[in-house]
Length: 452
Image (cartoon, rainbow, N blue to C red; front, side):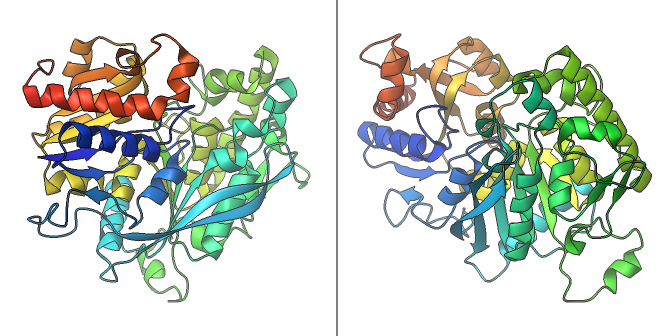
C-alpha cells in the first residue's frame, strides 16, 4: 500500500512538516510495511518557507528503497534549499531579520526549469522561455506582516510593504530567476507601493516629491517613476523582437504571487473595505485607504493600460498584487497551484498512491470553498485516489466533506485525552495527530470510510 501524506500547518501547534511527520508515524503504527511519501503543503501564505525547506532533497520517502520503484522518473523535484536571512524594514519602519529560501534544482537536466516555464506560461500566456534555474521563496508575513505591528488606526494608514520589496531585491541579487511570494498575513494596504520603492521605483506627488509611505500616502500619488526599477523585473517588452535581442547577460526574473484571495482592488469587496479592519482601520481610515488605492490605480493605469483594478486577486494583501503585476514581470496564481508546482505534489500523484491523507488545524466552511485540503483531495480524486483528513477541529458535516472529495475525517477531540481542552490539544498536537492518523488508516483499511 502506498500513502501520500500532504497536510497544511495546524496553526498555533504544528508546521506542515511536523504534521506530516506525525501522520507518517500514525500510518506506520497502523500498517508498518506501508510505503509513505510526505509532501507538506500550503496555501501560499504563512508556512510557505517551511514547505519550501521540506521540499528539498532531505528524506521525504519511507518504506524501503523500492518505494515508487516502478515509476519511470522521480516523483519529486530534487532541490538544494538554502535558508537565508535578510535585514528588512518592517511595515512601520523598524528593522528586523526576515527569512527566505533560495532553492536550486540538484538535477542538472533542467527538467524542473521546463516545468516551471510551462507553469508560468499557463497563467500569463508568455512563451515560457525564462529558464528558472534558481527559485526564491519568500513570505510577505516575514517582512511586512501583522506580527510586526500593533493593529490600530495609525498603523493601518502608515504600514507599507517596503520590507517585502527588500526580500525580492535580495533574491534577485542572489541569482533567483523565479520568486514565489506568499502574501498571506500582510499588515499593509499600500498597493505594493512600498515593495516597488525598495525595487527602485518612486511614487511622486504633483510637485514631483516622494509621497509618504503607506496607504494614506497614496492619497497624494500622482505619478510613478520607474526609471530605476530593477531591469530584470520589468514587464516584457511588447515587441517580441526587442525581447529577443536584449543582452544575453540580462536574465528575466518572474515573480509568482501566491494567494487564495479573489477580492478586487477597490469597492465594497476591495482591499480597504474587507481587510483593513483587521489591521486596525475604522470607517475613517477605510475611506482614506480607499481613496489612496483609487489614486494608485490611476497611476498604474497611466503606465500599464492593461491593469484592471476589478480583476480577481488585485485586492490581495492590501493591493500588493496590483502594484507588482502592474509594473513588474509578475503573475498572480492560486496559492495551492504554486505550492503544488514547487513541491512536486502533482508528480507524486502521478507516481501512484492508494490513499491521500490531508489535514489542517480546522476544517470548516472556508475549507469547502477550495482551501488546501479540498484542493489536494480534488486533484487526487481526478486520478482515482481516495482522500481522508485529520483536523484539529471539524466544523463541517462529513457529507459536505465527502462531496468535496474527502471521504473520511477525524478531529483531534476524537482521540485526545482531554476532549474540549484546547490548551491540551495544542500542547500534545503531534501525539494526537499520530493517533488520529492511525485510527483513520485502520478505518480506511477496514473499509469503514464515510461513503463518497
